[in-house]
Length: 114
Image 1 (cartoon, one colour):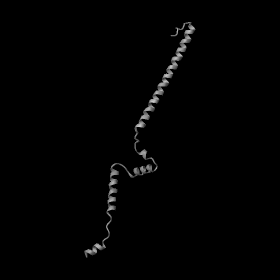
Image 2 (cartoon, helix red, strand yellow; image 1 turned 45 degrees about the vertical axis):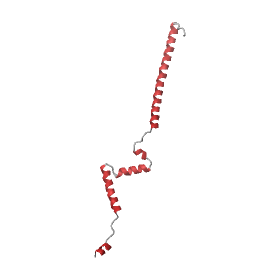
Image 3 (cartoon, one colour; image 1 turned 90 degrees about the vertical axis):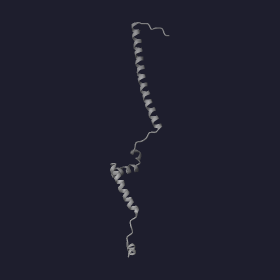
Image 4 (tube, one colour; image 1 turned 60 degrees about the horizontal axis):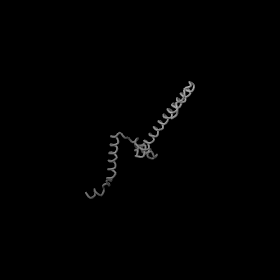
């Protein structure tokens, strides 16, 4: 009779399906604990399919990018300093021309050139 019981018994489910169900439960628990929901994962998948995977995390700058950024900042500072220097030289030149004009109108002689 025992032999008959073994013959008529239904086949057991594979252990793979039960373990995958257990792993799904475990995954959901982790996601819930971390505050991540299926909508987040859906958005990430859409972004990945759209080619925006790099936008999901911070982009790390390599040494060349940092060096280029520093050089651009130096160039901008040098250009600003050059503009200030040009403005000062322009003012000095106008002041010199004005003083020459005033001295000529008063009849003051120019000092000899060295």
